[in-house]
Image (cartoon, rainbow, N blue to C red; front, side):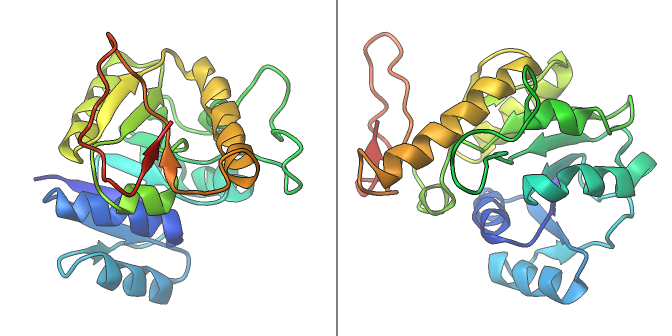
Length: 220
């Protein structure tokens, strides 16, 4: 059992936190608003705890579950408090009109966030290609992730497995650009071609489909 810290108290924090608690880990919820953090922690699990915003998180894995527009500021405010942590960036840096990504050409949200962290912390892109309500619904879903540090990748892969997800390593942190584009594509698909948000991206490896996903999810 490990402590996993979540910075943020929104819907994705709830979905990820619920999955973490179900796996037997301790969830720490942190927010600028302590009341919101406490309310979200109480919703997630009886044993969930809260932390002080800006102080060193209790968990070695820290999930950055804030809107992309605020992510860099949050990392800057934490500063040295994130030393030695694995930071999972779940953001999708998408324009409000869904016209594209708001990151600089040749970069990603994860790479921009990584510029602000200390050298002893490592950013990993994950969770941005799974809709929150689908994640909360349970079942073994494919979880794509990208990072540069080998040890951070191994720790996140083990963590994802503990949540009954199938971790799929797509490469270095530069591949976060592709994952974020996939996140945008999924939103477009939900609004247009699929006509529903009840689906998840699945990879068939060797022609074998993972059939352990929940019946209510359409695997695409």
